[in-house]
Image 1: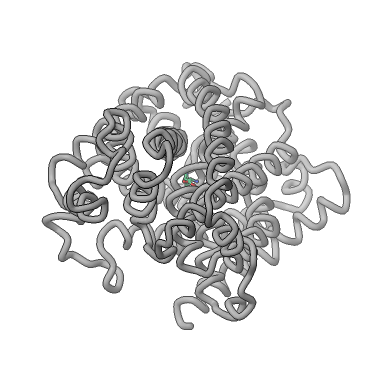
Image 2: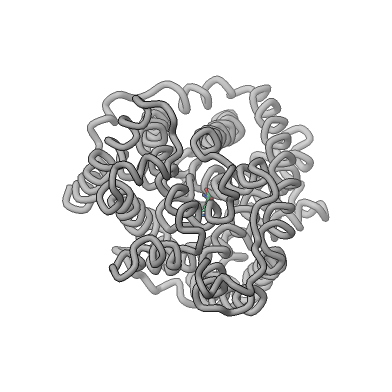
Length: 451
Ligand code: TRP
């Protein structure tokens, strides 16, 4: 045991199921519902879905196992795990990048979560059951461009996240997910079944499941699919590494990893089944981008039988999914400040939560008084952070973790830490992590920058 660990109560997952639910909670989030639906909408639907599933199976799940292996072997936070496993090297910078990446992502994630919470509230009080005067589009714009409203809801959301993270793994994060995940699954299936009964359902399903092969030669679709795969699996910024560090040594990784990856994908597909039939049956543009979930869907709910209830259920789902993911993002910097820098969990949670909220303020008013500010290309503040983290920091982080496992560790060490028993699976996994994943990430990133 390291000196720092001594005197610190050991916090860990009570059961492997608890870990799996929490990791699924991390994976299934706004990414599966809000981001998946608009990115799939913009990138041709079925073709995108196909490439996305390919990336998940071929690289996402193997890399997820790599990240879990490092965390389980390192038994510490993003930075501390690398310091323990590779002392005297620069590898801990991978963890530092994760801490910064997690902080940045949560700063915009909490803004969108705040919007979701606000929508949920207005569904609960019956406000959004019918189209407001001026329409949902205008309403959304007025709301996001106002200063205080969104900040208050974002603040409430962050307080709720900090509240559970303070309580730690077993008593906080694990318990919250034990309730949220089954509820989420049930709601999602109910909504999907309902959506399938709508008139235009078949068109929506065709969009989602009948590929347009000409899109296969479009490099942009690959970048989008890869970014989405990493984002959705929470890969690359050591969030999954941190979660795995709280596992007991007897809890095995491989089957859990596959389960988590598959469930995350199933959730994304079901979210697509919820959203696209509705979008098509009401004849709206699938390419409406990030506002899809906040403008398009509410106007559909307003003209749908029992739409108020459906809308309420949908936003309960969105908020819960966002919440369980936000817990895992906050845990990245909190674990670092707590376990490596020695701050109490409470102080670390409040400190990190406040910093994230402060950055989030800029992101939020990026839709209002700072709406003229652009960072990357002509993208606003939120889109810029989303673009840079999703398309560069996550893939780069995932690539570094793959190189760590594939090249820094010996083959024996890597395979032992992966806990795969089957010989051929060991070889395939190792080959992907050592050779294919780093190269593919690099090629896709470069092509999309210069292509
Ligand atoms: N995977 C989550 C989603 O789909 C977002 C998320 C949670 C995340 N933790 C992360 C993304 C860590 C990257 C890294 O919404």
